[in-house]
Amino acid sequence: MLVQRRDSIGSKIQPVYALVKSRAQRGLVFTCTTIIALLLSSSLHPSPLHLVLLPIITMFSTLSIYLMNDLVDIKIDKINSPTRPLASGAVKKQDALKLVIGLGIGSIAIAFLVSTLTVYLTITYLLIGVLYSIPKISLKDRSFAKTIMIAIGGLITSLIGSSFTGLFEERSTIAAITFMTLIFVTSPINDLADYSGDKKYGKRTIPIVIGKKNTVLLAIILPFMIAGFFWFFHAQFNFGILTPIAITVLSFFALRILKSIYNNRDDQKHVRVKHKKLVFLHYGLQLAFLVGMIF
Image (tube, rainbow, N blue to C red; front, side, top):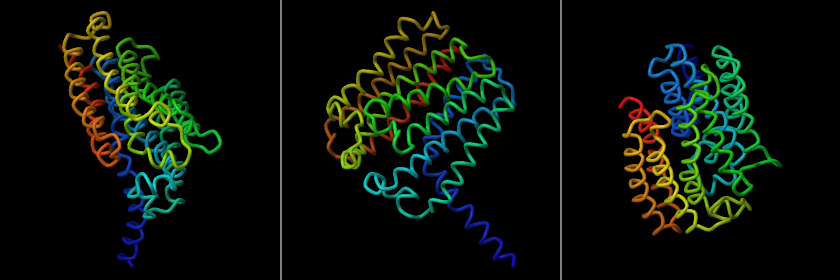
């Protein structure tokens, strides 16, 4: 009897684990921005309660959004990402739908423990996720709208981190806008890796609209533009000199990866492998804000 109960529990946990694992990296990127915004807005002295609750809100809501997208994109993912739990058939749609709803409701419920503003931001973030994925509206299929929606989502997850202080704490707001801008580097490169499936199903992503070559060139330019901005204005926004130095180093790191992508832009496997390395730009950017505040 006990063995049967364990098997039953295991059968319920396994699909949840598989789904969360498949999107954990995305969740961590956005959650990291929430944590850094919290540290910036609290001058490195956050409330222990906020330090626990705010990252959970972002992680839950981000996982809900990305798994909702996976539910809608099963056919396309069978071409672009056949190993994902839903595309491979390892997890049932019903299990994924229950998790999407549970994570979404859970994130809103936890937001009520922080502030009204946190609730509004969380609901807005989830609504953007619905508009991004839901059929007929499906903003992800509308050229630049896809990347713009992801960028706005990144802005909101940063603002969630400072939502207990009010909406426009200066340093965390600048960090949020910068993260939003950096998404225009990594997100289109991810679309470049999904080029075949997206084109087959009539999606109008940035690589399909402006071409593979221009997509990579745009991704090369933007990090250096961000670095230039901070070289001129870091002092005005109370960041130390290490912030522009760190972002410049990150820009050259991105350049090295993007050069390889540019030379192999028709090789979708190569692009996908290199894109995973670009994700570290987001973590590096957040650390640049943090060290610029300390030093």
